[in-house]
Length: 105
Image 1 (cartoon, rainbow, N blue to C red):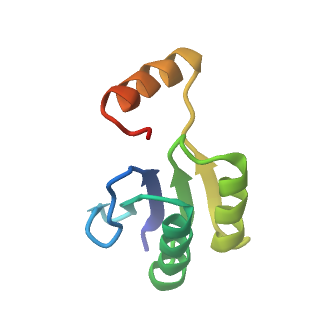
Image 2: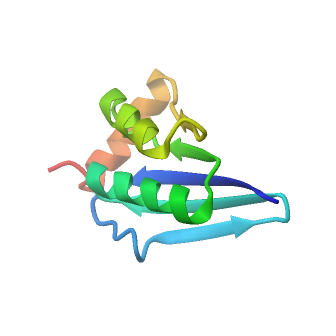
């Protein structure tokens, strides 16, 4: 049986039904899904835990503490939830690219 991880990332033009990919070895399965907002993230999380037996959820740095708590609640007590966070300079560098590419209204 493979260890199954769900990576959820925010992007303003995401369609979670269309913007997803699965990478798989015999022992590891990583599903990446792009979402536009928290409501989509929660739906994807619930669906994937229930239907795919996800063991771990990894979130992009764009999730707030409140969002993370809601994801953890949706995933349930037997699913690990982690967040990919960078240091200050990394955050500033990526924020500049997001700004330049029109991610912020």
